[in-house]
Image 1 (cartoon, rainbow, N blue to C red):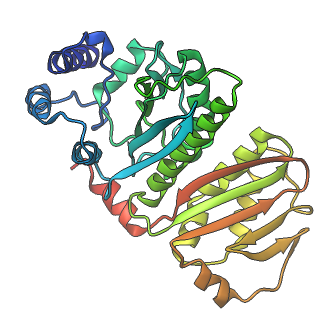
Image 2: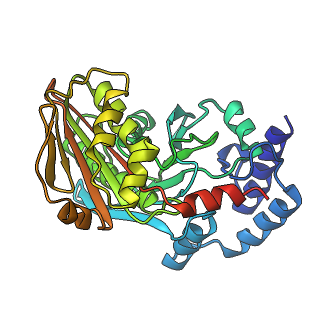
Length: 346
């Protein structure tokens, strides 16, 4: 309850700075689980931040820097497109490096369309009592889009981006993706229109870019690992297999050591708890086929190891038992990840 009251207090303070109603403020925070927020510092911080409000590129960059915790770099993406013969901008800024395994669902009414880990309103505010790290994404557009349509668009984009990125598969209590539509451009978008399709594609592109940047900046990470699973029994099965492979500590360690250990990948697919037949699947690692129809294939281990040293590598598993596909982004697991998380609290 104290966490809820603190969250409401933050909204009230920010509303005074923004000269709006407290109900128009959506709070987000991060911290150590179970620790109350340092409200004296936060109250002072809100007052100070209010002195730097503006709409320049520099202000946007400062915002991107301000929300970083264990992040090592700012994460941003934007696209410009024409809708109804008007220029429309869609941009996003995000943070996230550890405790990343979002499973967000829709929450919140109105034009502020929010994907939240906890759902609801009061439940989400209670979650602001604090935790180690989190994924936050703030997206804005000057297009005019009905709230219901905007909600569906963000849900679609989130499923294939933020909900498809994992560093340690530890879902935060307050992972948030927020999309604000001001309508300032005058470009109106209606459901089922070609402009709606174009905007959805642009939203997917921005969200996927941000998700990939989060994976690339995983705590202690040295590379992005893209896991593609196709021809699976169902979309749920494809997603389960891809996520299981991406979350396997043994697979992630192999990626860190540039070790083409296909057995760890195929066995991870096998324990995902969904339909899978190793006698039918085909595994391509960093562009090289290494396993097919239940048998290892001959390949140059040194050559594949060299390819695995790249900044981004791909694990492509074809199940050959259906038509569904899924993609998950993750990173390798290094000693630095253990160091960061072992020492975080103390």
